[in-house]
Length: 199
Image (cartoon, rainbow, N blue to C red; front, side, top):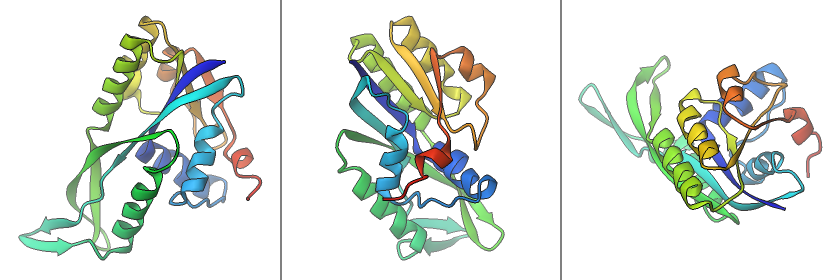
């Protein structure tokens, strides 16, 4: 049995996989349901592996923003409430270590929808990968993130003796060739297969 750590960039997966699955496959899966998220993560863990820890990177919802000198309270907004409840629930799941990044407000989209960008997550993930690699705490890391910014961390992990697997759903998105070059294994799992049976 190999000891593995799983690294999940949640915003990358939520937008790149779950939302694209709704558009491309016409298969809507509630990504605010923690049970669905855990099911998704474990679909990329092989039976000869056991999970040391799941590092889950997510940004803390913003309660208040300022737009054109006016303060806007978001704490009663459904998106804020749902995101906060999700974060609270996922943080108590077995083997989950939540790493919280930050959201930066960039302005308003049409329809007065706040536009946010995630910050710090790549850095946090890179530091955690480096820590596990330098201390040889696991045999392998599984990356659930399609962001090419992670390539330096993948190189470091491999250089320090860890095997690197990158997971993605090939019926929803394509994986960058650059990421494929810097991992040992590519795990393509169909989104439809993961959620073909609802419990």
